[in-house]
Structures are given as C-alpha cells and as structure tokens.
Image (cartoon, rainbow, N blue to C red):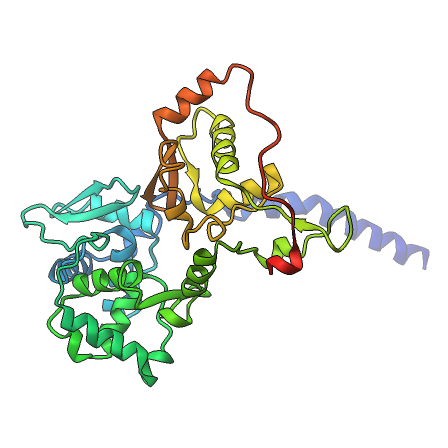
Length: 354
C-alpha cells in the first residue's frame, strides 16, 4: 500500500508539470470587448430609406407637418399596413436617420421638437393649434349631434389630437368626409378648445357634458375650489377638521414672483403642470383655478391680473410659464425681499371643499 500511494503522488506531480505545456499549446481566446455605450444613432439602421421617405410623403399628403413623434407613429402604421415588423427606433435615432438622408432637411421648431422636410417640396401644412375656425357651421352641428347620440356618447377617443383624428376618420362620418387628416386634427383641437363638443376625462376625449372640463366649468361659474383628493386626504396638525387654503389673486402674484426668484440661472421657464404642486409644497395652499373663476390653469395664467408677470407658451413637453420683464423689474425693486406669508382665503373645511 505504501508503494501504491507513492506512485499516485508521482503521477499527480507529473500531471501538474505538464499542465502549463498543454495551456501553451491551446490557442488563446481574444479578450471580451467592452460594450459600447448606446449612442443617439442607436436603432437608426432599422429604418430603411424607402420606408422613411414613404412616411414623410404620406404626412405631406395628409397636410401634417412631419414632426419626429408623428413621423415615428406613421412609420409604425405603414409597417403594420404592409404586414412587416415596425422599426425599432426612438425619436433621437430617427432624427439622425433623417439628417443622413440627402432628400430631407431636419428643422428645429420653436416648440423644442424637430421636423423632417422635403428639400424640394413646398409646405402646405395645417396649423393644428390655429384658433381660426374655417369650417362650415353645418359640419359642427352634425358633429355635435353625433356626440349627443348613443354611439358618440359611448365613445372615448385617445387624448392626443393625431390619434383622436385617426380614429374619427375610421368612423367614416358623412360630416367629416373630404377633410384631410391634418384638418381632422385641427377639428379635434377646435372641438376641445372652442366648440365644447369634446372634453377630457381620465386622459381620454369624451363628449363635453361627460368630461371633467364641464364639471370644472360649473365650479368656475360658482367660484368654488377644485381640491384634488390627495390634498383633501392630507393629515393636518389641528385634527380631522383641518382646512384647505386657496390662494387669492394677490397670493398667486406673490407666489409666482417667489418661484421666479428661485429659478436657477440656467432655467428660463416654469412647467405649468408642476405649478400647483409648487404652491402646495412651498406655500401650503391650493392653486385652484376654479375658485378664481377659470376652468383651465392655462387660462388663469393669462388673466390680466397676472398676465404681466409671465406668458404661457407651448413647448415639446407641455405648457410653460416664461417670466416677463415686468416680473424681473418687481424682483429688482423688492429690496427687502418677498414677504414670507402669502394671503389666503379664510380656511375652508375639507369636507365642504370636497
């Protein structure tokens, strides 16, 4: 047994000595390459030039300006109609692909978006946000009658103008025949902003009488505050009968000035969608447009009592408030700083506000 154990130890030692020789004879594997960071152009190779030009030309035919987000949707629609997979491309990669196309010119728009335009083709696009109504009254009467009927009353359209217009075109209504998709988008916009045929409810477009917009108009007519459930449910220091404070016009002015003064040098505007949250967290009050007689916050900011401080502008990610020179002058003249206490209404019990 002693001799067998000694032989096994010698064999193991010989194997250890031969191991480096075997490793030297094997071909070396190249080191794994580090993954390159995803660039802005990632995904652009998935968009073919014929498909890209087809999508742009189809938007020209619809009299829709080929904004990047709309062009991306149209590419997916055309791919689905042709029975092929949609392009795997984001808006940034699509911009790179359009910039590389010799037939297209990428133009940066004031809203912060970009559009892809044909270099040798005139522009005849419909301005979807134009307030001018160029459509016959008979069309509006028929459209209002449709949304008052049983089919239209049960309809919930996507919240976006393009998606809503596309779905309405599929309904093949006689009153909308003959209009291009760009005009249908404009009709959807006017139906919301002026005609009060459609309104929003949970992000969808529904008949105006069933929308949150109609409810807010009722509150605005009575100058009653619209208190969000989250604010009404907040615990308070003085017990369950705590109150929700609503900003007065003077409080709105002072609050806007304080928010403008707190803006960093690199920031040139305030997000309108974050304004209520800013008033709630910074000043402990609700900025209720309905209490001040307006159904929309954007309309409140254009009221003459605050319109001298900032202007409402539409940008890529929504509406913003751009400070005016009058607001900056007031900040300069306020040598002692802004008052810490803002004027509010007498406290209103949350149960009554709800």
